[in-house]
Image (cartoon, rainbow over the protein chains, first blue to last red):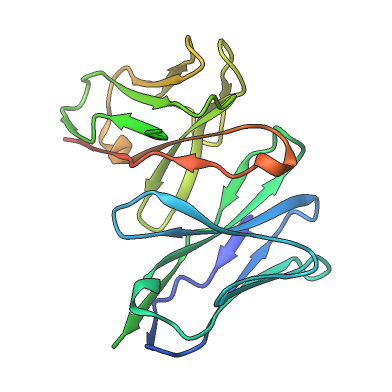
Length: 111
Length: 114
């Protein structure tokens, strides 16, 4: 089983749609969780950290289920500018633990 | 602040040639990383450094060497390039500690080995 698994997509949605991405991780000792966004031919950038209680940042909501080792990202009212690849990222270990990246889910928002 | 910068942006090498990729950060970060990104593979860690003068192997270190002689710079070397090293290389940096886990990435170096 791969360490971090994501549906590669692509997800093609109209503007204004709500879209959800899922991610599973294999290491139950994982401590920190993130969603990164990567635009075409650009570097990854942090979108948001994922906390146990769930967290929201504007139109974006992230959820973590430690028992099921599952992370989700919900995007409401999709904008054209949301088109990108969304990377699920997990950190295992202490302060020197390294990040494990999923392969990413591609989102394309159409007018 | 320039953040994390990488040079060169793009390079074409012939098999067997050598080159060095330079990463520089001006955020006074302790940790620095080199990743490669291939289609369908996601980002994979090559080497990393937790401080000046230290380096450690990541997931895919073979064929690469690194050096961290100055805190702000992290060099990635390919001694004898192979076509399998054709990839996009990203450098990243951050500080240790739970509140500072975000890794900041450079713009990438696209390498083609013929």
